[in-house]
Image (cartoon, rainbow, N blue to C red; front, top):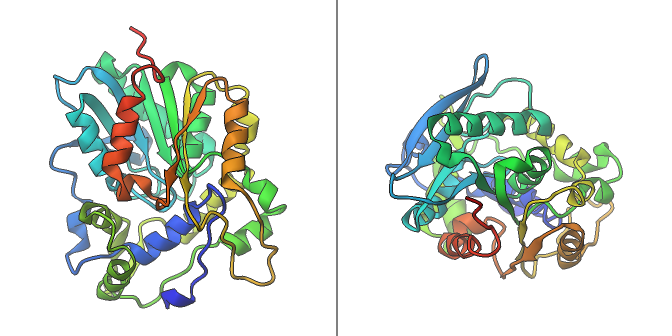
Length: 344
């Protein structure tokens, strides 16, 4: 099954490789999947109604003793908030309060049949931020960090509402215009449409994940489990439906981060994962195979941003936050001095 699935990385839009791996990696134990939808022990989980009938689940990692810049962490496409657990835990220990939402259609949050474009998702996030400010003014400004699709979201947020942020960080995302790679939506959908797992049991998916991601921390693999639920017939399905996945993919195809760069005034930390798979292509022989240089895209973004820095994770997985949480959390913490300045 999985050996027959296409495996691809589209520059920083390695995000669909992430989906395939998540779709392929996501169930690692014979445990009841509902266990992995429980809130992390160290965090408070709240439900924030962003519009009538639509609730966003948010994990808030906070302590009264934390006075350093707070963080907003956004997951990628077909992912969930728990992927950030280990990064959040370390940032909390380092003195930062942290907020991590399950974005619309994902994880524990509501899954309406509408609202999956950038405008609606960013509006959801801004309402979460407003809720936090209403509870405590220390949340007034954040450092927003997004992985893959989440990286594109933090770029859009920084363009829409720069007053909300000390700065942003883009983790292996936010530096490619997907519409330049696929000239029409039909080609993009054909190349990047997610694989459908039919009749796969949790045990089968668990075996495949463990076989391919033995180097990941166990907590990262556990978090992948939260991407799925078990149907009444005992097979596994993702929380994000195919239709909603394609809605988001279409919004990514239309989004042009390069158009935003010159208008973004807050500091931007670009964090690409650079590996031998930097330019992998779809297996579909009928689709033109794009060639690209991820480093070139990152450097182009840096040259256009008002204040930017680059930190490369060499030979790293796309899901840096799950595979190397200690290194990523400490990098973000270190950048709070000098790069993400604290304006009192």
